[in-house]
Image 1 (spheres, one colour):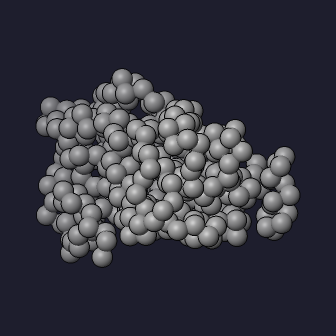
Image 2 (spheres, rainbow, N blue to C red):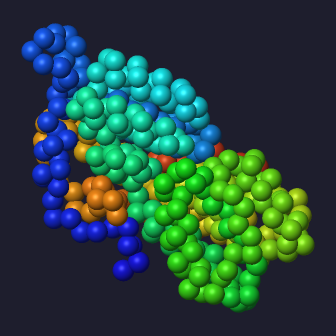
Length: 355
């Protein structure tokens, strides 16, 4: 198997028992019930921003909040808005009020220090979507598989255009190197593309930013004399930046993506993006909240996979979405036909039966 990042694990009862030792409260007999009780009943969540992907506020927040509150727990969900200092401030405020569990999406490594503080107080930490060194659990999608799906879409797109992948000019537009998932996406994609003979013609610094990706890609395209056959883009935001430059130069080539964002789905329908990897947020949020609720109840979760460093890993399966699968995302409530089918996209929606 190519998924070298995953190792079978029969159970993590021993590890979990240690993590749960201080889950209910902090402090000994001198602590008041007023300070201890909220800690047992509160799930503290920090989202990274609203720019790298619209999913955090539009999908993750409501899904996490509903699941936790429906289970009878308080959900303290805040967004650092791309500011690592704000991330640390939010964490300190949450910890001062008490947390029974912390569910963190890393932001440029800021979650590492928060994890250490939480664990020092006996609070288990779930790394959500992005890995965090030292976290007690990691809940995400199978990120190597995400990359494999992206890489295969590029290979298939080149072949559909009658181009030999081994001689094609392919630019790699990866994600932010501080995001642990970015390497998994890259390695998964490269494993497929390299097997087809693809060697990146250019690989600008990775970033989760559409405008910066556009700038980086334009510089790479200039360096290649304006010639490119395909672009591996790690997510829809990066792909959108790339596509603005392709449009500017009158080019249309296979471009990959991820997140099934409204803009990404529009580009897929328009043929400007060959596909997007759909990671159904509700499935990831469901897996994370089930784990958080077990910890809040003092139960010992069982997880069957780990990362290379031994962190228990719950991996949700992603799927590839082309024009024929866009309706599935809408049917799952994670995109809206009204938002997608506007302007020049309307005809493409009608042609693909989008409603």
